[in-house]
Length: 635
Image (cartoon, rainbow, N blue to C red; front, top):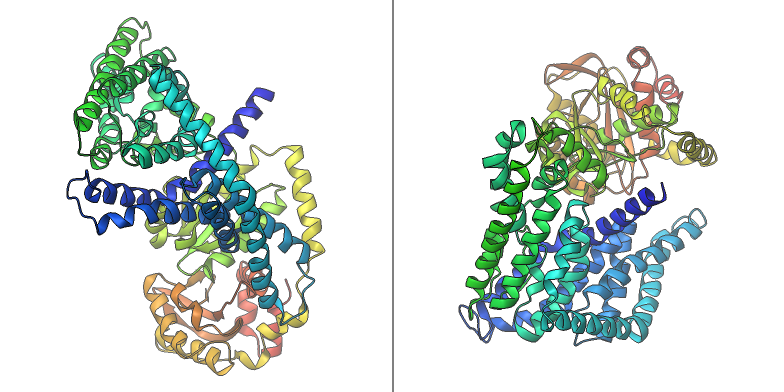
């Protein structure tokens, strides 16, 4: 148990490190290409354009890492403070690219501001929130930047220099190939990103500053070891593994997705020998011929490696030779192991499941060798819609209620698709939006629904999650429920959001556009939004229907229209005869204007009430605005 917990902790830490770097790989590639093209030894030497190289590696890349690390800890606010703190280490050690420093100060800055926000939550007088938020971020960020400048920057500079000297010693002593004994098995244990982007890339970038390239970028990214394994399965494998190996080989070698070959190695643990020897032979070739790259190759494909190979000397020959040698050695050893195997079939699906268990999450490419399944341990579910304002908030409210009733320790939140968090394990969207969500977060388990108010998918998901609940988790949920009881929404605040004067009874419309425009103009007259918001509500309906089910529609603006929201509020339109929303009759229309999440409490209540068709029928039959409002507030 202790070893398992330690493995999970190391995996989570490694995932956190890689999560700071991977979203910014595009910037690394841009810097690498500019370096390869325009420095004096580049393809097209250009003194003016080469001036971009220094500022990008000194300022842009560390600041991006610091901001991303901060955002992972405390969203946008944490990202800003993390970036401020990172600037301190950058200036404190101007001669060293502060990637390691950014990985320290970004999350640290976010952690400090997160703790501060927790201390003052609920203690700031109304009207002073923005003042306190801005000045606290500025003051704490400034203090952290100064501390980083005085202490962290020089310390990280010294540590980086020590690491570089150590790697240089390994190279000089001819011992660098031995690193494959650690790196290749670590890849199968999903520690590759932690090693590659958390350790090797920062040191490699320092070597690039000194020598124009670094061998470290190819220690983990070399596709040769995995490619050799897959080629062996193509020729000497059995059953499903042999049939799926050609497709996996293409994805691995050209697409650079190395985890595609992990199940094949796990299926036959002796193949660890193949990838280790293949990796060692590849590194030995790089050392012998003087190979290396100018920036990280991500993904680790032959295409990406070619793009960031420096043009001078024998770099291309060395890098290609290293890939070829690693492939050949891995293939020969794998072929011997497979031919000597007595198994009658290869359980690739079982190995894929084992890989996902070791990783602690669903693989983004596991579907190429098996059918994807819900992660065994789910702790974060996210509802997503275009703006993250209406339908997703209602769906999240309903599922959150079901999760609490089932005593599950699972976080249920909502957001816009463009802001989907990278750690979301389950993503729920309307059917039309699921492809966009998959594009944004391919690693997550996606669920499509056509009715946010009463989808059978909710109960199916709850049933699946209940299989893994523990007593400890139940206690956590009970504590969360007690906290929720102590944090009831302010009734006066709710009254400001939903006023009787903004409830319109017994209306009729010929089209849904007419109904949406009526609800939007009512929001404008009530002072909740600017005039431009009305057109944005029509545009939002064009993306996907805001019909929620149970004769309820919740028209609202697009994500871009949030800037037109003055304050949160609702308009309610009763349409007894109904109005057509893409073949469905909407009899209750809730026009929504949401700012800074202040509308979510009452929207949650509306969702709970409207989840029962009987309650919606009572709303439709109500005779006065007061009667209708009382039904809404009855949850």
